[in-house]
Image (tube, rainbow, N blue to C red; front, side):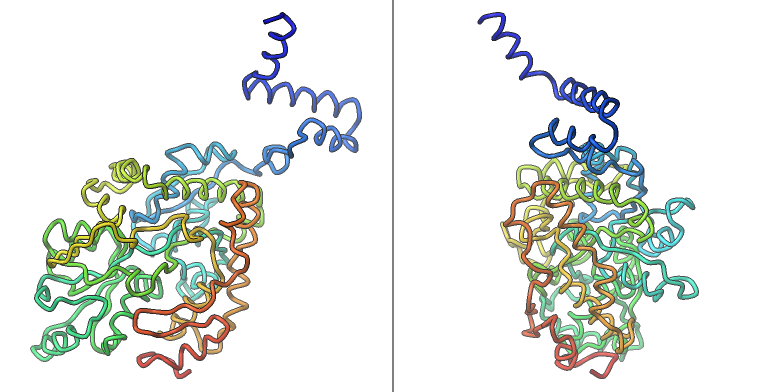
Length: 450
């Protein structure tokens, strides 16, 4: 190879760091010579393939505090931190801090990061709406929030005490109606647990009970239990049934304490679940930081979705500092292998958690419309609530689209519109986001007259 060829080869194979330094030097020198007005022309010349995000939209701050609950749908936040995706996108100081409960998550969001709270969180999808409207905050004072992404589809479950194991309860809970009525007649209380009033787990178990003619407000007592405490409470007989995300249903079965009646994907296939929510004032003050955080989480979602990463994912989140859960309580359902704990075993199902597949990350407005409609059904929102106005205020799918474009997400992975259309549930009920009232009218048990 000639000296000239060697020189050319060295020039074209220099390290990214060296290349970045040479381009920064070019920009600095050009700026000093040409002045600010001409700088943008120099930038375009230096980066003919497009301006890197570090130059086009430098984060206003490299730090944000995000909360999470020990649930598998928090995995994208954990992986974004563990795998360096936050650092990659220019926000290396993002903290991912464990929260004791959804109530604690709400309280810390109200405080905000600047007051020793948190700026955003892995959160139940309806919560940003309930918090923004002041429905679940102290003195009903609103704390405006936004939803930036959905974190996952499916993979929650409804589990039942071994007391009812012989009933072979599935998505059809009809057998429990008589059993619960008998227990109440014997002077005993029937308790079902969820994780936050008006949250996803509350809505799933209410839908499941109501579909079987069991009124979740009149026929049973509904209690709130933090996700990591579900198994321990079932063990000591605190509740008859609960709804929560993984890994707690799988752990329950592995410990022989109860059985899973159904996964929530059997109630509504490919349903939305958790979201990445942030305080609206943080997003407004730090739009570039927000986009960087979102890009890191989206990249982590793609990583979590790859089958070849499932074992490593289980090992990472199972660590003491994250979930403190054995891999054996995580890996089965993470891969779609479900031991229901009552003799029913399904291998290789498609009921595993989706982090990216099937537009899992995109926050469809039509899905948020369902959450609000269900919370109207159960009295959490007034019947007069302007569903579309509330969704448009909280759901920032536009920021998701910006982040997707910056990440180079394939067009096929970006939905054409903000609605996924009509949704059909296991009992035949249909939710048309264009006509929520028709859906409400079709429901038998509810707290509102549609």
